Length: 486
Figure (cartoon, rainbow, N blue to C red):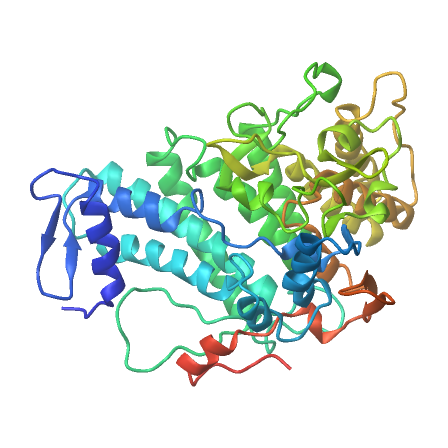
């Protein structure tokens, strides 16, 4: 029998507290409580694998050019400035420093691997429990797809990009591939970026037919075949496999293609990522507190918050672009007058709903980018196809009176416009940092002031090694086979 970590017992015991059914779980040793039914595995999947009721990370956007900071002597502002400065200034040991500063949900290495553990428990036990074959296929498909999502996030934080200049996925180190909950005597070392992506691809290709056959009835907060296809479209885009990205974007849009027409919104706000109300959501995930409690959020009545939406991002929107109104929350503070600024995301709905989502808007953008890359490579028909996707999105985002179709014919010029459009559409959705990395890791500058005196300017150089995050010291101390990033 496999030996399992005690965390399985903790997972299962916590679930058993939620159920009074006899035989729901069966204890087989002092250290191990084994799930015996598909119902038990579904509880594990919901509580320990899906990222709906806990924050995994909230500092990613602080790494990008979408956020800026402003000093104020107010104690709360000064505290927040200092707490999250390690991320905003790209300190090499930022996760260690964020942990020292008690920053919320900052150990993303641990947070993602904890969720991967939940997926692995399901995959290890699914063939051993009682339940219908359909239930087992559904659980296996969900666990494979969800684990793929987590590994895509991890490898893009802690490994170099798959595609681009000065990268080699065959030799660049990614993250450890832990594919079972079984205890091993030898700690797992880092797989290459290529190996991690190969596992992601393999798992998703296995998950899709399982979810098509058994998971079509899954609710919007669980993976199904559509969301798995969506993820493959993103994976192939990150890999530079343009044809495959287009193929899976097509497959996704054949099943769900709706966009929200923002001209039809009559309320003051609209949560474009809310699975409850948005027609664009393919899969809703993420605890909404990740957005409502962001370090660049509001909460100050006498000053701006420490970190907030950058002018650099805000100035990219035309006045006729409705995303400027519906993507950001305007927050007020009083000095001698009432002042407002764009403080945080408005893409979610406060309350017991998700914070982030896979959206159809990204599918159109993924496909457009792939077509642009094909056009740059000489495909004469690809520009018009990319324009069709971009214009469809803009038709749903620009005020009706101001909308005119884009007619750019030069592929490089269109690529420049596209990158700005993707930024406008997907801001504050864990996309910008990964896009900057795969688009060549450009130079970024952040201005910050931590105490009374002169602001300092921190520069992330072009192709800077800090575009790849350092592994936390705690993880290195626990695993002698881990190699730190340079």
